[in-house]
Image (cartoon, rainbow, N blue to C red; front, side, top):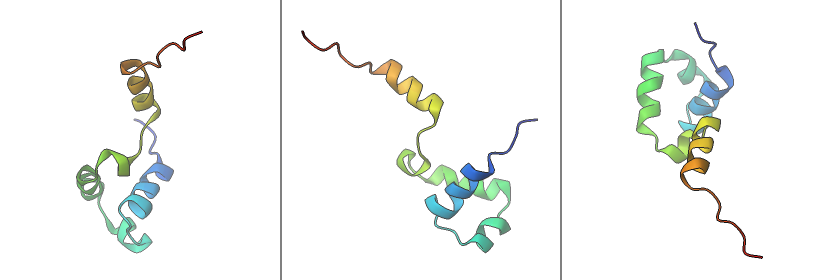
Length: 65
């Protein structure tokens, strides 16, 4: 069983979805998940794994001497 990342979920609900605390805590996990899917990537934020994948796909070009 994995740990629940409460700070990330609260940030998603309260900041990303602009829910009131009462509305956030009244949601079921399925409802929150469905609402999160409606957000674009910019609103969801970039995870560490996502950043790593992005950096591998688009490495910085070497600087000329």
